[in-house]
Amino acid sequence: MATDTDIPMLEMRGITKRFPGVLANDAVDLTVRSGEVHTLLGENGAGKSTLMKILFGLYQPDEGEIRLNGEAIEVESPSFAIAHGIGMIHQHFMLVPTLTVAENVALGTRSTRWPLTDLPVVSRRVEEISEKFGLAIDPSIEVWKLAVGERQRVEIIKALYRDARLLVLDEPTAVLTPQEVEEFFGILNEMRSTGHGLIFISHKLREVVAISDEITVLRNGRVTGHTTPAESDRHQLATMMVGREVSLAPDRPEIEPGESRLVIRNLVVESDRGTTAVDGLDLDVRAGEIVGIAGVSGNGQRELAEVIAGLRDAETGSSVQINGVEVVGLGARIARDAGLAYVPEERMRDGAIGDFTVSENLVLVDHGSEEFSRRGLLRFGVIRRHSQELVDRFEVKTPGLDTATSTLSGGNIQKLILARELASGPTVLLAAQPTRGVDIGAAEYIHEQIIEQRSGGAAALVVSEDLDELMGIADRIAVMFEGRIMGIVEIEDATREALGLMMAGVHEGSPA
Image 1 (spheres, rainbow, N blue to C red):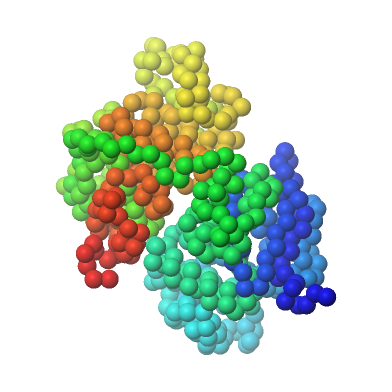
Image 2 (cartoon, one colour):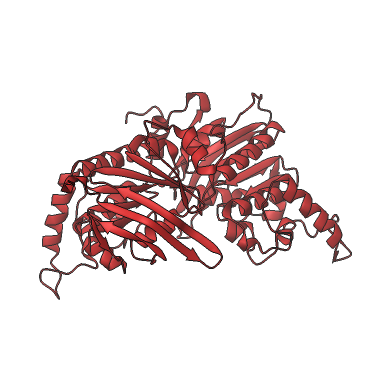
């Protein structure tokens, strides 16, 4: 006879969800037990988000049932989910920066002195939760004063304050330094020890193996595997996700770097808010090398990339030279003519026009060249042949050249942008977050293309918040913190711990 301890905290049985033309979830089963970290693993579009939105009441399933502590329930809304102990920690924090921690926690909850607030009661409860789970947060501090890792703790406190027993953690380590990840995992272990059920969604396979008790893999809306860290390593998990062998560490042939192709001196850049985003930065990138820029988002990486690409002005005295040509303040065309190819961070804002066809986006930058136009008239035959060659060469999966770019997957849009930029034969490649939001298969291909540019003698600057990515492809890694470079490390000397300290503002060689 089953006892209470045999009953899973959560059972999702045969969950099916259809959208027009898409079977997002196809008879998915998921079981989570008390005191367990259960990872949901899969590429973009595999069905993870849809399944969790069903659990949280944002979608209703077409088929299947949800059982919570053995009882069948219909999760009709997020408020119903919260009332039944289900919480969700979103990748992008849902906090009001100008309010205190206690005020953020109190938002949306009923006060003991309703209709008045009772912040002292909230603050005491926040302190209790903080002490119990090792969250170390002052309830009276304004959220804007907190570091990224501390803001995430506030999100966890918000869920625990509402008595959540089952928590969904959506890409929770995306913006954390390695040290903050370790601290976060300590918090998860404490929650696990108190019987909470945790659903962990992440694409970082190293972390999945480190924290999970159980792993369920989704592909194309179906469960394609169920395993544990003891039974599977990162390579096996990647294969389960993609359905084929995947190289997590691409081959990087030995090359002797040549002359400096990208030279940055005393770069000072103002942010859109009027603060200093880049503060006196110096950097050289040589022919035949890949330099990675690591750092937590918001430390000047975006502004650095935009100045190099000619999309943002810099302060007087700043210098950015591409193959000896000064490009600061002269616009994107000058940078491109000097030999730059640019893969931007926001692919649909700065890299492609969604309503344009695949072919139109492939000649978006160079349509005015003699190759593609004569006497002001586009040479459509030449453009189509050129576009087809790039689609074939860069393995862009598209129904046709006249397909609207917005209908392609994120990975294929990124391949399209990469194809256009590399077709010009650049000598300097600037790639910002080149694999953000793309699946493992597309990421593998993009890394191969960047390394191929390096082998051809180009200088590549890769800006990424993914340390695993940089440690896999870079020759040197420079870490940015508050607009400055904290240190530059040769890849053979790079450790996650040392890079993480610099990401947190500790100078290389300084006591922690």
